[in-house]
Length: 173
Image 1 (tube, rainbow, N blue to C red):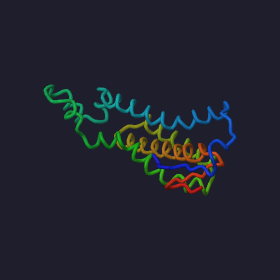
Image 2 (image 1 turned 90 degrees about the vertical axis):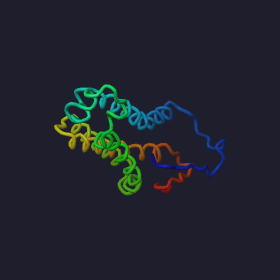
Image 3 (image 1 turned 180 degrees about the vertical axis):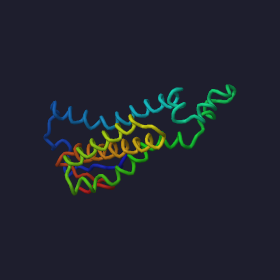
Image 4 (image 1 turned 30 degrees about the vertical axis):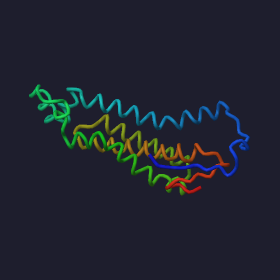
């Protein structure tokens, strides 16, 4: 989400680091942030097309979907609230990734990763217990805050060795 650029102070050949199992595991953990976004795209896309979900949270879309069979599916799912439901996680993740680096610099990485996990857990609980669309959207916004915060910390802080100066728009070295 956040844009960054890494510039080596010395040649990469002079780095002297090895690719160990710890380095591979660290890279896999950092990549999990992208997996979470991808997983959410697949899940939210599938869920928003199910009858039970639409009946409960988007009854007007459900009626339109079942009522006229001659209309294209793109027109049936034409709802600003449904669009906001889908995009709320990504917008929240984008906004959070801009501010997460400043918070990480003040409070440290460990506390920020714990905070991201707690926010994500709260968003999951709220989404699971949602009784109306507003609770569902608030849960997705919290999920976006958690994922965006964790991605910023993982990609821009944990993935950068000390020998490399990170030039990120929002995280000075």
